Figure 1 (spheres, rainbow, N blue to C red):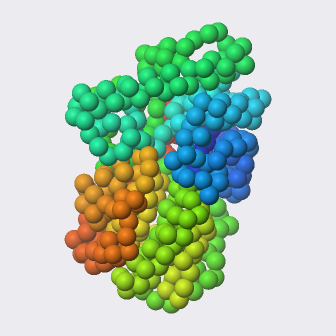
Figure 2 (cartoon, rainbow, N blue to C red):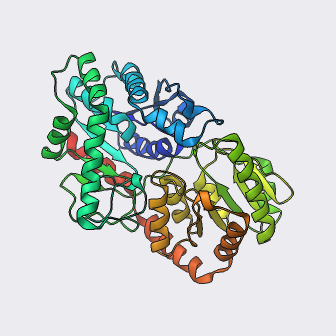
Figure 3 (cartoon, helix red, strand yellow):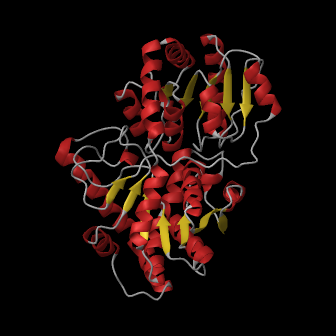
Length: 410
């Protein structure tokens, strides 16, 4: 039995898939602890896993009245990452563990922490961000600069990260009594040692780039664990039973201002009525609420249960929601916002698994209602999505991950 610590830092969509990994590792005989923000305590403990709370940085990103771009910039600034890394180290420094699994936001502090503990680590990522000629880092969107340009974009991004956070990493190393090593040298050491990074997406959606270095592996999707005691609310089951399968609307943890939330609410309500469908709206970060006779608003609940009961899913194309839609075999209406969302939207469109992409900034009632009608009536689209679901559903990303960790531990 190994003691495994998963540093799962981020939004619900970043954390939930890692509960699936944790449960499979526990079933394989390992002791698993997940370190995450305190608000995810019940999500993790309900899955039967140990939890370590990480204090969430106090930034405007948590304020629904703050512009999303400004809030995210504050979170990603050196001060925000310094605060986050210090919270991670404080939360888990005394945890006895044999291996550390690092989500992207935990890597700045996690690499020196693993070194100080004298244990191996593995990267666990939901997006492909390592250098390849096939596309730039997924977090930069859906554009392409050609083979050489894409690799240059990745290298430039890595250089910028090392420059931006070099002082932050140096501070962590001092705190952990480690010798001075620059952020760029640490990155080079990881590359030369073929440091393992496991990616939680399907090769059906993103084939492993042929020019990736050894150690960069695609495991397959990691499915969130559903707590055994979870049951749908009676108002939800009553709504589903009262008519045709509805259309799902969700914008994940997108940090929408209160004004934008009001606009989205009216837009969704108008699109549902124009398209002549029923809707289920997941309230999300900003508390979007569009309840009326044909629309039900819900809080967080398992997409694995909800999506197969939908006629289509309208969403921001976060990595986890994209995966859940594919698994359920229902068409997607992609309305991406920031970060990796345009990348996943483009993947779905290129595979013929969604309607035409509508960026959130260009979203209107008319465009959304037209896309909903297409998603719910195009039989060829529905058939393609069902075939994709058969492929994705047959994969077992958690089993791949457990085997990779067992190999590393010997």
